[in-house]
Image 1 (cartoon, helix red, strand yellow):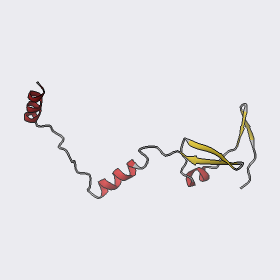
Image 2: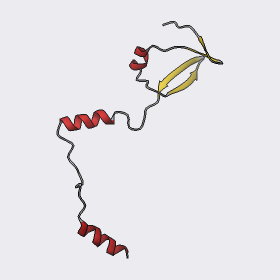
Image 3: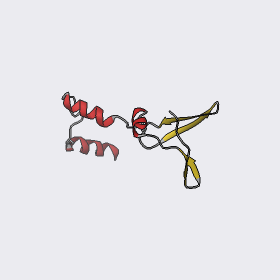
Image 4: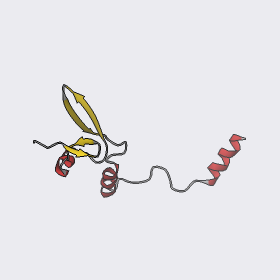
Length: 85
């Protein structure tokens, strides 16, 4: 695909079609690499990328049970507090 270089402020750049960004899974931040006179643009993966989809799948599969109870046993807290002092 050929693209024209355009002026963007004091710089120059190219406009990337949305379809290309989606295909490469580029959302907001990229890594730019220069290798053998070629510019390589790679998506930067976020640490929690895909978590929302994984949680939704867990919900659909009824696999989202709590591992630790929502409520804390006050007796356990009191015993722990006594051990500290």
